[in-house]
Each structure stands twice: as C-alpha cells, then as structure tokens.
Length: 594
Image 1 (cartoon, rainbow, N blue to C red):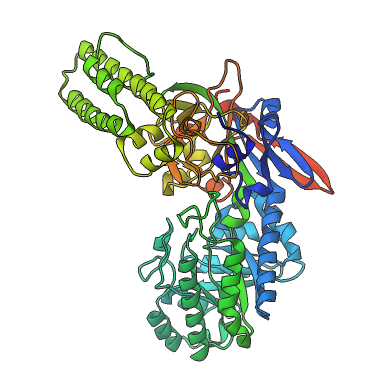
Image 2: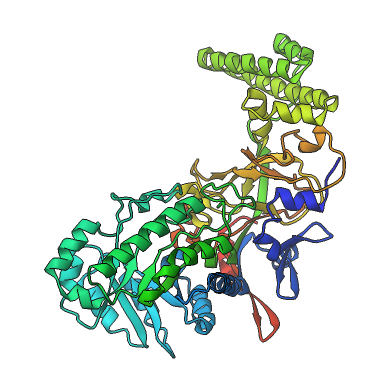
C-alpha cells in the first residue's frame, strides 16, 4: 500500500499555493494550522474543548490576504512602471460579522482600505467607524431619500461616492449636491462563473450606455459630480480570458466617458470577480480559477496604464478573496450507516447474476455485466409487487451484487498493470460510476443550510478534510448527511487531483480505499468523486471533519432550518506577538449531538 503525507496533502487539497501557507499535516496525522511562528493542532483544539463542532476564525489570515493583494498590485505597477493610484475597498456583503469588519478596519489603516455598501443597515454599521484620514465608501444598490440622508449623516471623514443605475437615482441625488456620483454601467461581456447573470445587458446591475448618455444630456450636474466608473461582472470569475474582456470593455467605456466631457471621472472600479481558489488545481472551473492573484493584478495594471493621463485611480473591490480562508467549519461525525446496503452474501439468491460477475475475466467484461445488472434491477424494481417477501429478496439480491462486484474489482485489479487500469477508467462507464459512488453515509453534527448554505444556493464546493488519521489511507467513500429533515442536507462532492511527486511504484489497488475498494485518486488526473474519502471511526473515537474556506458569505446567508442556527466559535489571533485562542458562544453547542 502506497500512502503517506505527500499523497494525503495532495488528495485533501492542502498542497495548493494558498493552503500550503497555513495548513499542514503533523507527524501524528492531525491537521495543523500555521499562524505566524505557531502551529495549532486542530484535532487537539476540538477534543480538549469537547465541542460537537465550531467555526474556527483565524484573524491573521484576513490581514495576510490584505497584504498579499496590496503587494501584488505594487509589484505589477513596478513591472509596468505605472503611476496609477490604487485604493482597495471591502464589500460588506461578503461578511459583515463584527469581528471581521473590526479586523479589516483596524489593519486597513495602513493601506487606507475603504468599504463598499448597498443597504441602510450596512450604512448604519459603517457609521460606527471613525477615520483618521479619508477613506473611500462606494455605495451601490437601490436608493431612496432615507438612504441618502443616512449617508449624509455619516461624518467620520468618509469620501462617499453613490452609484447611479437609473434616472430615479439621478433625480434623487440632484437634491444632494454634496454627494459625489459613481456611474454603474452594464457590461456586454459575460463570464462562465456561477454568478454569470451579474453581467450582460440583461443583468440587474447598472445602466446601459444609451440610457446613461440620455440621462447625462438631461441632468448636466453629472458632468461635474461624476467621479467613479463602476462595473460588476459577477463573483468568482474563473477565466483570465473572461477577465481580459471585462477589463478591456470597462477601460473603453471609461475613455469614452472622459471624451464626452466627464472630466472629473477619476476612479475606476472593476467590481468583484477575483476568484478565490477553492480547489488546489487550476482548471478554470467555477471554483478553480485558471489564474493567480499575481496574474490578476498584472492584467489590470497592464490594461489600465494608458489611463495615467487622466490621473486615474484603480479601485480594488475584493471581498471573497480577503475573508474566505479565515473561517474553517469543523463538525463531529456522530453516526456511520450504509449508503444503500451493507455488502454481504446471502446464499439463497442471485446465482445466475453472481456467476456472471465471478466469471468476468477483464474490466471490460465486468463493465458489460454491470450494465446488464443495472437494467435488470431497474426492471425488477418497477415490476416487483410490494410484498414483504419480494422486498426482502430484492434487497438480498442488491446486497449480493455489491459484495461480488467489490470482490471482483479487487481481484481483477490485483493482476492488472497500472497504465492499463488508468486508461480504462478515463471514460464514463458503469464500472467508473460504481468506483466513485459512496458506500457509506456519515452523519455529521451540523446543518448545511446554516453552516455552508452556498452548497444549497449555488452548489458551492468546499474542501473537506479529516482532522485526524491523515497518515492512514482512507477506508471508505462516504456521503455526508446533516441533522436537518431535508434531503438537500447532504454533501458528497470531492475533487480528487493527486500529482505524482513520489517515487514509489504504484499498483492499481493503491488507488482504491482500503475497505470498500472505491476510487481515491488517479495520478495526474482530475476525478470528481461522489463521496468524501474518510475513515470509519473506531469505538469511542472522536472523528472530526473540517470544511475549509467558509469565511465568505456563509455567515450572512446561514438559515435557521430545524432551528439549527449558531455554532461555538474559536477565535485565533496574534496580539503583540502572543498567540491568543478564545472560545465564544459555547452555549450553542447544546443544539447539536455530541
């Protein structure tokens, strides 16, 4: 059996450019958090506090991400000898938890980090923060006079810019000459992200260029008060090619608006879109961008350097990238059950089908048998009379099939060459479907609706990692079930991508789980499994799972399904060089089984 720390890092996505900075595996096989010069054993942290689950917030990671963004743009500007201004702002919609805003506010003083808001409650929240020097506050969304009055009452040295997206906005803002204007334009360029409808002529955001020009001709005050061009092409844009089109179109619009007389247009805000790498490989999917932060910054600076003549300032509006990694959601496994049936042999049924499986001499033959079996089971299920006897016979038959297929897969792979096996499973087939289908159902002490609601909303991918036994080969492929009474409360997505940096010679069985003989990985090939590679908890063992990078949007979107709101929080920070760990809201633990 070939297994070790390097394969575990690869399989569980800890080897990517982002996670390698703050996560690793200890010599005991535990997931450890690296914060400054400190290492925190997350398994020990959970067991010592005896929690059913927790949100672990790593505040230094927010500061680290802020540093990385600013440094990337500084390097890009030096490379292109750019004299553009650069102003970062944080959109509160990404996460407006007080601890998050406090961290961004206080640390952001060194960068003059501004904010983006869109509602009255967000305006009320930001009004609690006082500035030593002006910070930018960009306001988008639907406005009314009450909203504008709230903004005017914000003192604290904010430079407030309010977007217009309709003639109604322009009519309202006409009465408030002290407010600077941002112009939010619809882009024609679209993206391939899960939020692609944010862009295009039919998106809910912005105003068309034709409507804008008509409004400018009607309301001449816009010539003097318009200072910002703002676009929004959608969150988590996966392709650098798409970003290139978006940035190019925005620059073209900016130049046009300057040419028609909007001479005070100084800021250009490309909106959100910088994709956070929720996976450790670059494939350009909705949750796996094909570019890095460095490439993103370089593209923007390269495309905008010619705007120096206008005294242009680039506004970086980043939320997800700043806060996604700071929260890790950890939940305890409380029960393990068969996904369908538990494989075993009943001697009194299925001789013919069993014989066909046993006689298969190759994966091709087994695949053909599986195709026949699938059709036969479908017919039997639809035609069998609903009697107890027939139901028991059908369950026994399915149980026997599961057992024999598992045994036959192990037998065939034990005498196959690795290359032969890999070539065979490159393409969809009943056998591949069997290999990536879970055998067990693991119940976890949490609510998907509350703790990772974007799984329900946009089918968000979250990397799942056990907190312990990472130096042991996973035993099973399992689907995770939460505590709600809803069939949507399940999670089974797992992107398996293992590079082959190790020297050991592999055999096909090395690629399978140790107990249920399901597929774990294929070297240098991306495989989407329908279950999570896990271990079977031993009697009395506390077995925890970490859902990584739940820090963006999940706090704000969490639902109260089955009244399972809240979770204890573990705050991790470094203050004056000292590591501080604090458990708060521990009373929430009483809602969840331990």
